[in-house]
Length: 140
Image (cartoon, rainbow, N blue to C red; front, top):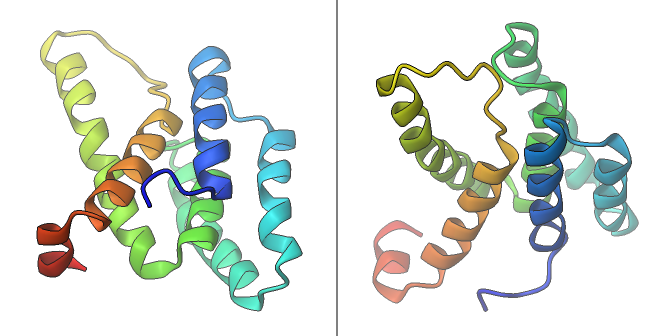
């Protein structure tokens, strides 16, 4: 079901709003989103969270993404699992491509493009595509 309840479906819109307004993702909101996954006491959840955060940490050090984005990507990987996360990440980057190209071609410089809205779009696209019968048989 596309609109199924999940922590990501609930929190990604909130992360997007915060990132658009403040250009940062509050740690309190990230911790609140972490609680349902930790309550499930799944050791793989914590492992995916830590490994994905470590994977994206160099991107933060190179100033390619912000610290909140690293934590949010870790959270998304922890909830989605590795295979779904790869699709989510690809779709998120695909969603961010058009606005980034528009900024580049228009000559406007934007050093801090908020990524959380694109993560939300990637999550919505992943959920939508995973429930489309034809695409499901081709890709999932």
